[in-house]
Length: 91
Image (cartoon, rainbow, N blue to C red):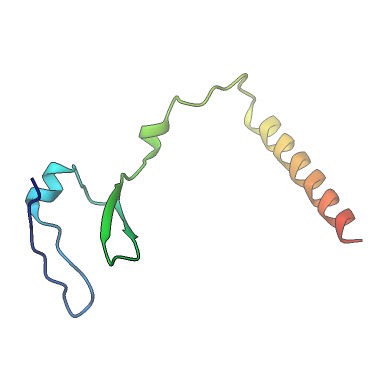
């Protein structure tokens, strides 16, 4: 069943998401709302949850752990190589 819940747009273009909707869809501070529109003037709202470092911690496989200085050296070498390739493409 379709339920109608009303929000008012302020002079600044802001709305308050009703508590019932926030609770039902677990909308919390930091979440984003995406507005999907169509030619029939319909608007659908999709919630995009905020992702924190805690949400992704441990999800990436690390083959080996290098000491900081060694990791830094590898990053600089990779960056330098990319710059050389980019510069050669400009010639």
